[in-house]
Amino acid sequence: MIIGQIKNGIVLDHIHAGKAMKIYDALGLGELECTVAIIKNADSVKLGKKDILKVFEVIDLDLDVLGYIDPGITVNIIQNGKVSERKHLALPERITDQIRCKNPRCITSVEQGLPHVFRLTNREQGIYRCIYCESKAK
Amino acid sequence: MKHLIDVLDLTVQEIDALIERAADIVEHPDRYAHVCARKKLAALFFEPSTRTRLSFEAAMYELGGNVIGFSDADSSSAAKGESVSDTIRVVCSYADIIAMRHPKEGAPMVASLKSTVPIINAGDGGHNHPTQTLTDLFTIRREFGRLDGLTIGCCGDLKFGRTVHSLLNAMSRYTGVKFVLISPEELRVPEYLRKELLVERNLDYVETTDLESALPDLDVLYMTRVQRERFFNEQDYIRLKDSYVLTREKMALAKDTARILHPLPRVNEISVDVDDDPRAAYFRQAENGKYIRMALIMKLLEVEV
Image (cartoon, rainbow over all chains, first blue to last red; front, side, top):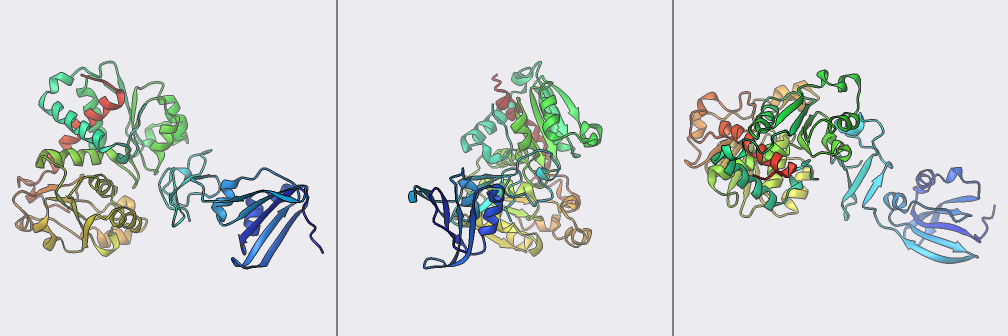
């Protein structure tokens, strides 16, 4: 099978090998009706092996979610067959409802309807803590 | 509107102002006897407490205000499964300020997101207990006349002891403070606190298991109880609960100017024969809790004399 060139869409490049499916699920790409290509374990000068996701339509991306899962991803927006925009990601300051607090003593374990919010407390080490109980995200 | 969820919500200047106000209340209680007239404090205690609840209530009464609330979750709608958010939405229509203790960590923060009146965290599980820390700071200041240049020993459960964590955080903002952390291996200060507070901020600290050898250097010895409710495993609790006991004999090793603090309640970690020693400051500390809470209620209600 040949994966064709994208005319209008998004290429998520430099995904750490093995993380493509996590991103596919987190972004809800399975619900799209357009073509989505998942390329796993492609050769990469930078990473050795990498995953790539190609979405054959320009969609709204939650860059915070992407940045949290893999801040090394490059987001290429393709329009009329050319890269119109390239975005480099960083760890977001806050992430909401992407991970759950694992601390059994945390209020989030019993309070209904409470968003699970984590804030970045150490950028170098990528440490996030629950805003309610301050437990480290696992 | 300001809440107090974590003692670090307050700047050093704000803490100093609270301490000044509390000291003035001690000197001139009559000036403050009616400043909160017609104001109501809701004391929402979803978990048992003696000192904290009664000191909040006494504080509000001594400011001329009134108190409503409950002292355990079974006598509140929480027993019927009501959420913290719903409880707070209702209560803030009845009260001007809320002091809340809850067994779940972060519950007062959730309350502060929903409340239209100031929320005071009166203890959330093993997490924060900022008014205890204010009490500790006020006590040290009253006993020594200063908060800088002191050697502070913390002894006992330094892993789960929230009062110790908050005290370390708060005291780390003053200059020339040294910490001596005395605990069994299993109850040492958590790794994140050691790394993020003690190491990264380059604080002067030592860790030891030996209380006797540490005692002669200390200005403050902050004793803590090994708390049964913080352990999931009863056997671990039984093994560690008697690790350190401060006795009259051990007090002979301490400086004449040293002070012993304890957030109370104590079980057996300080012998009763230490109570009469003038260096035993823990009952004075409990009394100070009322004055600093009076100062805090005034601040959050934006009440002036």
